[in-house]
Image 1: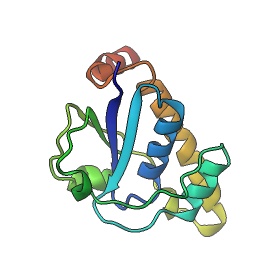
Image 2: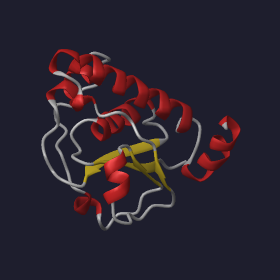
Image 3: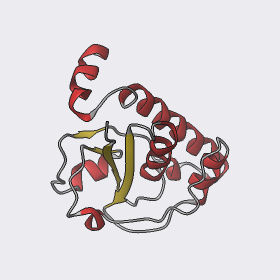
Image 4: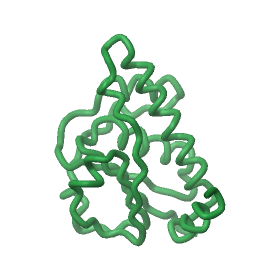
Length: 148
């Protein structure tokens, strides 16, 4: 069975989408190949790198990318992970496009920032494991109906 592909999109491709890419490729690498992109290119947040390293996932080599880098590629699933990306994201080709918003940890006050990144990481991991594990893009609708 070939791997399904998923693209996680966030505004800056600096935290949530980067963590989602790393988590999917780490935990579901036998069935999914994940990528991430943003509407704007920036840099990967050091806090994202740090909290991923805490659970044994190294994303220090990741770089912020724009969606244009993937313009000629069709994905099995495209997931917008922040509200602004869902609103400003132009149509992106995918067999299935869904929106799953996660809080922006970089908006937390400096003293709470690492905990906010950990919370986002954990929420993203939970969503990935509940919605992608043992499922392919085509049957996400069935999985969603089961949990409603």
